[in-house]
Length: 127
Image 1: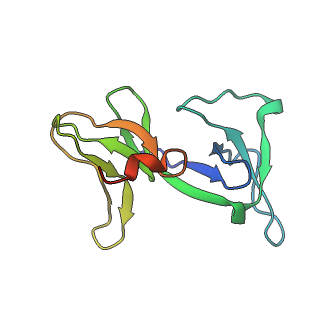
Image 2: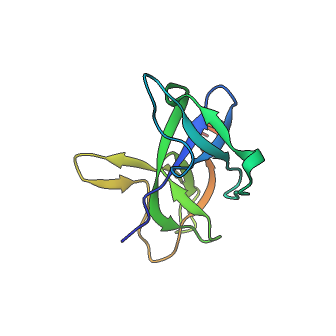
Image 3: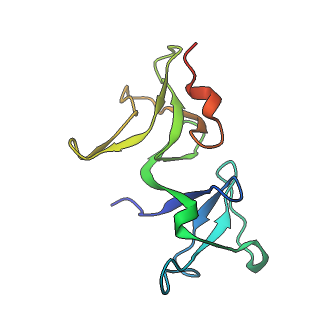
């Protein structure tokens, strides 16, 4: 069974965070969530790293349970390079109709995460 976890993009801070369910939770009203800075797939757990974020300020992205060819976790909103050697990129997104993540080409080789839709929107531009 895959691990259930979330990454957050704070529109206020303009950076990625990892949701920390052990520290932050929803309280009354809009409340806040506890989060830890999460850049390039690396997290350093330290009390000084923790942030309180308003849920309404965040874009939530779920972990797919998959790892790319560089051992980087793949989340919704990631932009991945095609694993067949083609000059094609995909955006990973959840599809309710198919009950699966789209944008992951199953060619027997792992894809490569090259960015995400919030930090690297230029990667989605049509060439």
